[in-house]
Image (cartoon, helix red, strand yellow):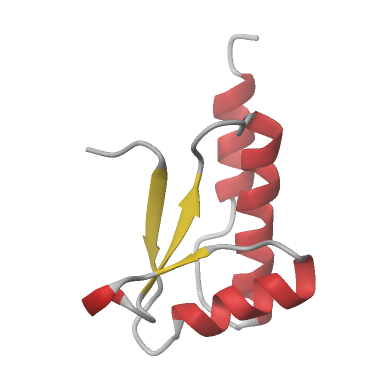
Length: 90
């Protein structure tokens, strides 16, 4: 089990590499590509080393904004849920 990377699957009919490209071009945020059989089907978020809660929130926001631009359907509210989880008990 590796806790340094999170892989996310894009819905069928969408291309993860096109999503990554949109996010890079629009928001200057680089995401990892899928490898092997997962190429174009997943993208990866690296969170090894100096990666704090604020950086996580920015990453999640960038992913949601990119998915919106690419017209990829997703359940909105993930950023808000993450923020509530992170700040709970502080």
